[in-house]
Length: 347
Image (tube, rainbow, N blue to C red; front, side, top):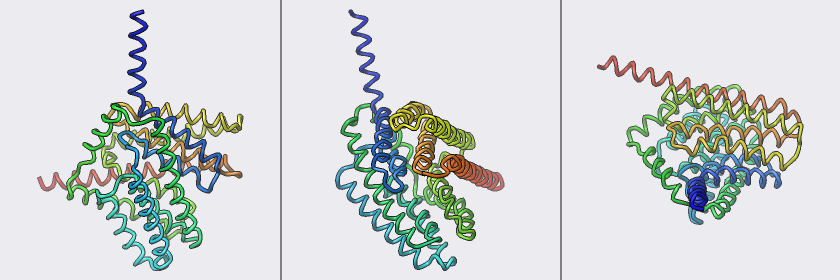
């Protein structure tokens, strides 16, 4: 009897400690299910963007925070649409203004991380899809705001099912400790990101590569992690994202054999457990696995939402994301070497 009581206590203790991970895994699967059933335009973005609201250390938004976020996003997307219409045809004005906007976004610490991510996507995606047509830019702007609203609403529902626990405090403290940077460090880092982004922005603008804008999105988001300056972290990031892509390909192959909605959700749940168990661990590179899972959701969601050429798209998405990750890691590596060589010359 005593052994059984001890085992029950251990089970309860472990279950309590696992609440943040279960919230992340079950929550992401729930969002995939809801958005797939609703089947609105760019629905797969909701599950990817919602991950940030369930990541280690994340807390449920208050009504005021959610409302302010949506209003801010509406203003920024609206201004970006107007900005694109006015300056897109004038590269000598468009590029410097876009670079300044991105520099400020990377530099400021006044905005929550998720707000930054949504604003980054808006600033990058809307102008470049507007190259083909201004109407496309407006459509994407509206979809981004709707996806943000859906991500907030659905994640708040998930927090009601899996409320904050003592286990969340560990991740919250680690996140707060890792985000402390001086003003000089933030500006230096923001300037480095612009150096990395600018060549890609110019290439996309000159050759009008609006169909490959996914590469730009991943480069912009991945660049937010200062840890990528470490070559070891960079290699793990490449492996994690490629792994996410490979798992997405395997999942797609299974879905071709068993084209069933319930089976798709179970697959998402299994893959979520694979990445989530590592993301919510104490390993110093744990955060990398969140990127791998977002890669999985983005690829699987985008190809299952397509009626035609889904098989070709899954490989295209994997290649695009791999290119983005490799570029960011290599670019950071080059900048890091330049900095080290300058320090050696000064010394």
